[in-house]
Every structure is written in structure tokens, then in C-alpha cells.
Length: 197
Image (cartoon, rainbow, N blue to C red; front, side, top):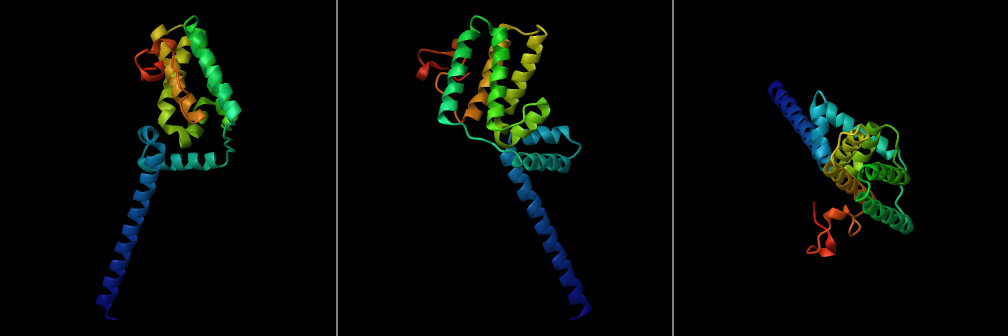
């Protein structure tokens, strides 16, 4: 083989290796975007670089894999659904207290499923692996609850907090039990008496 052929062969091998590396990175990125949805964009915006964000998300996957996530029994699922229904009924008479109760109920459900319930940021990071699409709701509910504790919320904001908690609650239950919206969201002309928002 001539020196020119050797150089051409080396260049071809290097180009092919670079293309494979680019394809692997693109595939990993697509996989992360698909798995984390809007959480992917949020983490990218918070980190110094896309690669740092992707490392963070892969680390979340690794930590999540170490958890023992438990499916709910039908009895447990029914118990939580009934508790949520009772909570919504109480909202009409005591919205401020009900938001705190909703947070506690969601936290109990999170714990029963096998997720850590300590630090809110860690909790969200663990939940993001399987429940990323409802985390914005959970963050918004958490923010409203904190403002509620300081006496800085309106009844409408408290209603929104309950709707936000409901999104993660339904996701953790594995579906949305019929009729689980705040009472003023029920609508007689809609199937099951419930509006979308």
C-alpha cells in the first residue's frame, strides 16, 4: 500500500469514527429528550452547557434505577382515589387548608410508590425520570402552597394548586380517576361532569 493510500485510509477511518460518535450522541440526546420531555429543556436552561445537562439527566436515570418503585395495589389505588375525592369536596369550605392536605396526600403517594420524599429538589429529580410531563404542575402547586403558607394567595390560585397537584397525583396513580377535579370545575354538560381545566 502506498503512503497516499495509507493516508486516505486513515482519513476515511477517522471520518467514519467521527460520524459514529455524532450518531451515538444524537441518539442519546433524542432518547433523553423523549424520556424527559419538557424537563430536558428546563435542565438545559439551568446548566452551563447541553452536555452538563445531559450528564445530570443520565445521573438522574442512574439514581432512579437504584430505587425500588412499587406499583399500587388495586386497594391502595382505590383508597387514594377516595381520599382525593374527599379532599376536593372539602376544598369548597376550606381551600387554604385543603391545598396543604393535597400536598400531604401527594407526598404519601410518592412515598408509597417508593420515591424519596425529603428535599423537594431531590424529589423532583427522582420523579423526573418517569413523571417528567407532570413536574411543571407539581412545581407550580408547590410554589402556590409555599405562598399560601405566607398568606399570599387568592382562592383562584388555591384552586389552580389543587388542579396542579391532581396532575401528578393522577400520573402516579396510573391514570385519572373520573371526576377528580375541584368541585367548581365540574360541569353538567361534560362527560362525567368534569371540565378539562
